[in-house]
Image (cartoon, rainbow, N blue to C red; front, side, top):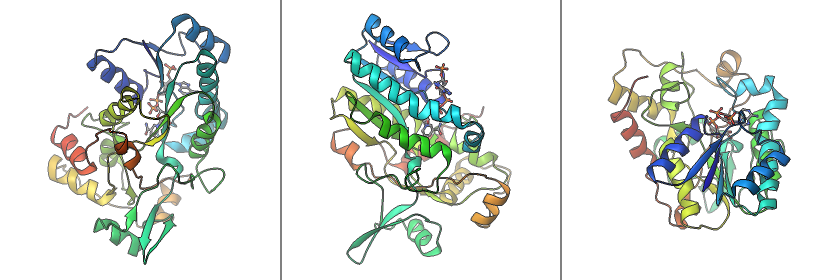
Length: 315
Ligand SMILES: NC(=O)c1ccc[n+]([C@@H]2O[C@H](COP(=O)([O-])OP(=O)(O)OC[C@H]3O[C@@H](n4cnc5c(N)ncnc54)[C@H](OP(=O)(O)O)[C@@H]3O)[C@@H](O)[C@H]2O)c1
């Protein structure tokens, strides 16, 4: 049996659907039933129910966005740092392997390969770098699992949310057997206030940047595949291979959904952070070759975006 934590959430519900589709024997557990953030209660539950594997899709995401985490720092720290550490200790004590949904938002920018050297650039909307992104230049490389987070409390500035996600990874590392699956900007064909493609359509003005993104169903399939393939435990970036500029996402929305509105963009970071956002946002390119190297198949970002928009289901 597989135990799924956080099934009531946006990502957890996608795990539940995929486990059903695979006809897996699984149980969901909500904090309303058992407060799994408490070590003693979780360990007791694991010992009594003996799951073969635990999926942790629980965590604290600010709503409607990460600015909300700045107003509830204790809750953010509890959900994103203390919870994975507690689950790690309980799973280790019960001898159960597990997987944790982390985030790519612990990075900023991309790596640039030029003149025989690779350097990190945190700000991809600098005109020359942005032009490289629009050309899909092979000079742009994603962060790998070996790269230290550069949008974290250790390498700031960062949002409080991102800081706690990076710290959560640190807090569980070296305890028992686990996967860390890094999700980034989830989207799919189901219009919802949690879906990136819906958010872009609803923003009064759009923020331009360069990002890797994760199709929600592709993400949960890839995570479960790491376990089914018995891939080595450790960290995996789980985004659709490649990256997109927000302008390109808008072009795809215009092409497939033909919305009545015209899209306007914030002129620059100064205007965006003055009027629309409080805490710094992570924008980054991820490398998924480690995931692919263990045999997990995941389609490219362009195909996943086009497929979502072709099959768009308004809310
Ligand atoms: N959505 C995104 O854009 C995104 C992007 C990257 C990474 N992630 C990560 O993916 C995970 C799931 O995100 P989500 O979008 O599915 O979140 P969500 O919709 O808010 O659901 C999270 C679930 O976590 C459980 N939970 C346990 N402890 C919690 C706490 N202290 N505060 C709030 N909820 C808590 C709740 O379930 P019960 O109370 O029923 O147990 C809740 O339904 C999180 O770790 C998040 O950081 C999300």
